Image 1 (cartoon, rainbow, N blue to C red):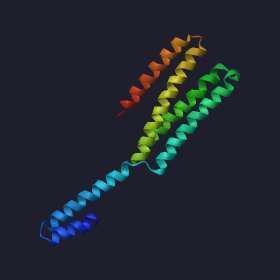
Image 2 (image 1 turned 90 degrees about the horizontal axis):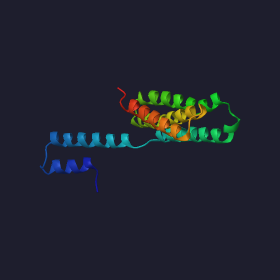
Image 3 (image 1 turned 90 degrees about the vertical axis):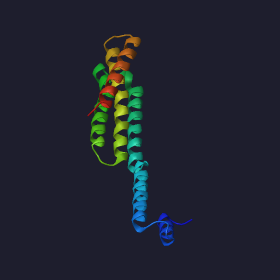
Image 4 (image 1 turned 120 degrees about the vertical axis):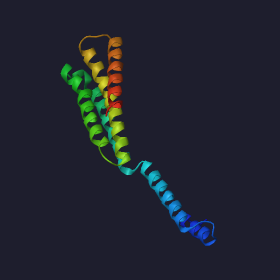
Length: 153
């Protein structure tokens, strides 16, 4: 099976299409192949996702191993600092032109929504609230954060 350019040349020699139509078809086909390759995840995008996962696991491991030894302010900072950093990273990545980096920014914002919910739950828990109250506040905080980020200009 030949390339599209070979097929178009053959059709042109046979008199089925003229050179203007062949050029138009070729331009259309090249535009489609560029668009398809841009939508595929690239190496950089995979690294962004991997970095987000590593930071998320790091927060969980830090919290699990040291939670009992941390003061109230430190317990709030464990999910709070990564939440702020993920918001900033997402904002910066969404301003970049490659589609893969923009998708990575969306993933960073997804992680920040989870971390914001976790931070809200920790604040309620450290303030003496019940577990049900912490879950409710966490879900509302995460929902509001997700809505605000989704509606961004």
